[in-house]
Image 1 (cartoon, rainbow, N blue to C red):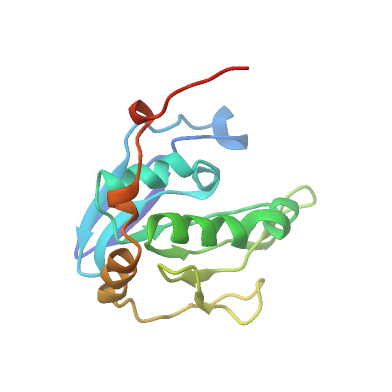
Image 2 (cartoon, rainbow, N blue to C red):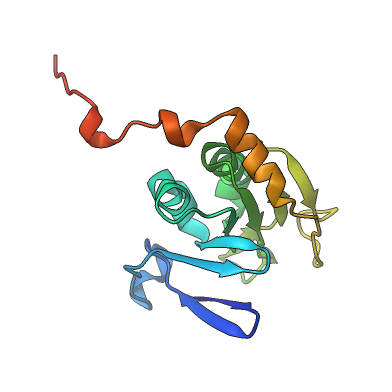
Length: 171
């Protein structure tokens, strides 16, 4: 369960896909987007990052501008996939992505990768902590006019085809 506090409003978001935690928690069944002073936010967590369709729904059905992805990727999956998945979600949704990440060794069996990062709608890393294992704040200005500029230059919302538009062929 993740919490987000914006302007005194507290939201609770349950991960839609649960992995290790599924013995202790129940997966959520609600996609959450909320207006904030920082733009329209899409709330996701950790393992959600592996499902681009969730981010597509947040972008095209909920008009999000900023995607939040607090996570605790393992060291192995983080090294291989963390930044590339975040940048892909930013590019394909044309949204800012803010990803706070747990870092370090929790116990003998669990180590989180870290690397808190902020990515712009073009997929460029615009802020990150100086060391992926460090504790602190990654800070960047979110210019929502950049979201609109990217979307105007590359209007994927107009070019996007939905499942019903595709013909299937099996050979």
